[in-house]
Length: 300
Image (cartoon, rainbow, N blue to C red; front, side, top):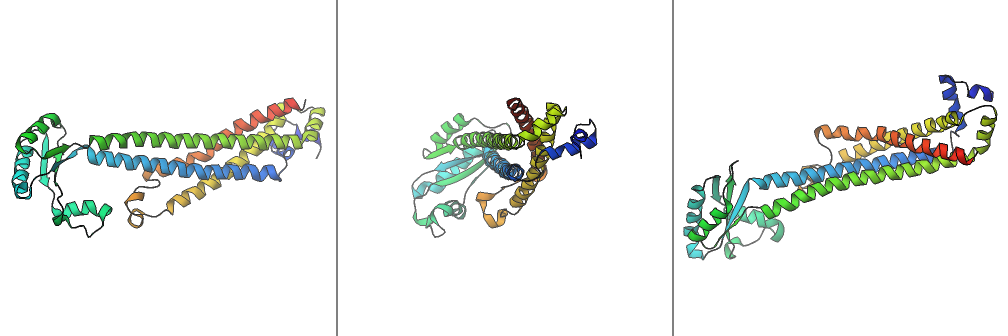
């Protein structure tokens, strides 16, 4: 095949122009491997950030409409003051329901920290009273004043100190996930740029011959851009597929326990990783095009 046929401005010539780029060698596997590895990592970064955000949101939502009254009193006064606190709560506007937690429920709350053999009856534990507020909410400061008058040992915990850190953690985890994906994209662009520059430098003699027979730099660059973009998107597709399989094989909620609740993708979020190969292709296109024209100027 003559060199003149490579520079004919038709689609067949564009496909044949890919032969300017070596089909094998370190630049081939480096580009595909880099794109695949980065896509694999991006899948897990995306899955972990989404899961962490959902978990923090779920905790925050669970605490948003609930509060707890912690009642400390002498043993002979505990039942009497509990009834007094319940009476205050049931007559407070904005509170939908209130109930005192049983010893078994309090033992279940403490079991993860102290084990199942905790002698609740022998310990001077406060009585916990759980309340649920309505959509309109209640006057927290007014309720605290009423509780202080009826039961001095009662302390209202509206879970504000729990909700605020969870909301901050959710936003920061999402930001961290996006930052990680951005760093992965930057590293991918850098590696593909190095591979494209190495391929152009290795084929400097071929580039000079093409120029001598009339090939423009845009045509030569297009050959490299096409080849490296196809390598990158194929590698990214494989890495994304492996990453999604890895996420799907993670332990389920039942077998992993509460710590891994919601880990991975759920529902429509399974479609999010499918955007990674096109994004990698865009990054590869831009990086290879810039590297190709820069290297061609150096070979002038």
